Length: 328
Image (cartoon, rainbow, N blue to C red; front, side, top):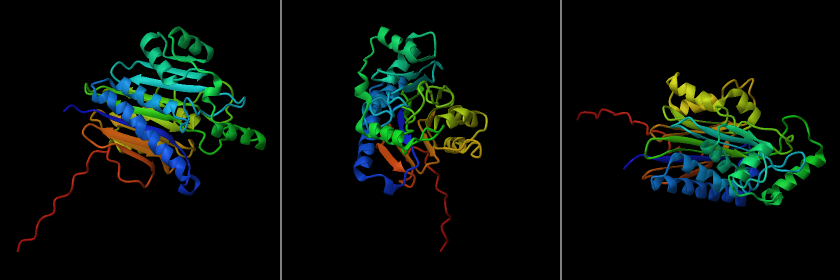
């Protein structure tokens, strides 16, 4: 059977188990399982990695438990603005959008840009007009606003917390996926609603190719999550690629080193998922909590939230040392 695999994330946050109620935790796990299934089914039927990561991310964009699409964080004006990107490891073509509204699935707009536009990145009203021309589904602003995110925004307004880079709780999440298809092609996709109370027009790392999203068939595919300004300045997604290609690091080591790159200068929540050309996956984060999942051909789906959950089945199996038997 040909190899194929998908890994996803639903955001990395600095949250303790005591701060997350069981109902919300279960919604995260259910949402991750549904997104994994959406992407895996594409691959299982022989579909492309590009279509698989889009399907997985679309599932999370529709799920109000995640900060992407419906359920996104609100800007200072109480509005939603999305960032998203997708990259094809075979062609190195990419599509990305920044600070857009109304588009139900930002990741699908990013994919259409990859496929049908001469440009790689469109922002604001220009991207929205392109979505209209491509007949993508648009929604009224009210569709995207959930009671939870509305409350978080109102709480912040009341507290007067409008200092630069300041965030509230779990409102810096991002969703993403990386995949390997049966033809050996890699792809990566990332989508986010950004920070609570961000300035109008603020764009994070997600649509920055090499920052929050990157894929190259020769090496790996990467999708990042966390504080966008920090990830962008560290060029984290490309850093994983560079450590693998030039530093000869293992996949997990490259992911972990990228997350801790310049910790003294790049302080903040950081996390990423990466997949290599064999369908192995790595998860790395500095928060103790990252919503994540993995499913490989002929394997079982794996979903986790906390750092201390069972050993990552996505990593290459460790070879056991042979021990010599004592002679009687």
